[in-house]
Image (cartoon, rainbow, N blue to C red; front, side, top):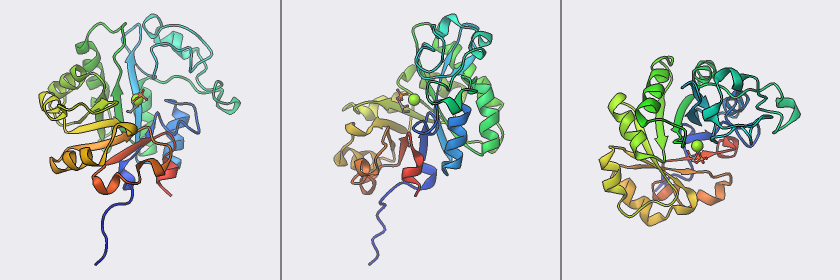
Length: 248
Ligand code: G3P
Ligand code: MG
């Protein structure tokens, strides 16, 4: 009898974390282009609001780590952010990269043929969940018809807000370690998916989630050995800085 248990993810279940961020500056067009070149079909990216309420694709709530400037996102306008270099910190060849807006990224990813896992970040400068989720929904409404979207967040209120606005989207709750009452917490959103740190996974847990039809993706795994025992237990997908290692 042929063994049909999975030994790795299918192509559609490999998400490039902040783009191919091991190989290009995270959350830039260069990192997303590299993900497409690496064969990925999905990218994960982080979004937050700046001072004028525009959605910016950036992980931190300051520009200090990933640009040649400084400052809190809540004090910077879109024009301010456009003056910053977003790639030279990673490598001289990326000096022309900028921190993009979500609108700009949606246009580029439509051209690259990529789908998006939009991770909504909650930061102290944000005024309300409603402002944040309304902005995300407005940006996503402008996407090309062929582009698939899912939403993830560490903040269940962001997921609840997105469910009200775009109930058709897959929603993923982000946890480091999956809490014991995961099923009730997902149902309260409602969400169908968990994105968990790979060190918080176990075979027993994955057998439970897969038996209940809950998808689980692991972040951020940059070594295929880390997840090798989890696929046959029901792990759905992986979020990785280097999608090429899972797509060989
Ligand atoms: O979506 C998984 C991962 O991106 C969550 O953590 O801090 O890299 O946004 P972080
Ligand atoms: Mg993220």
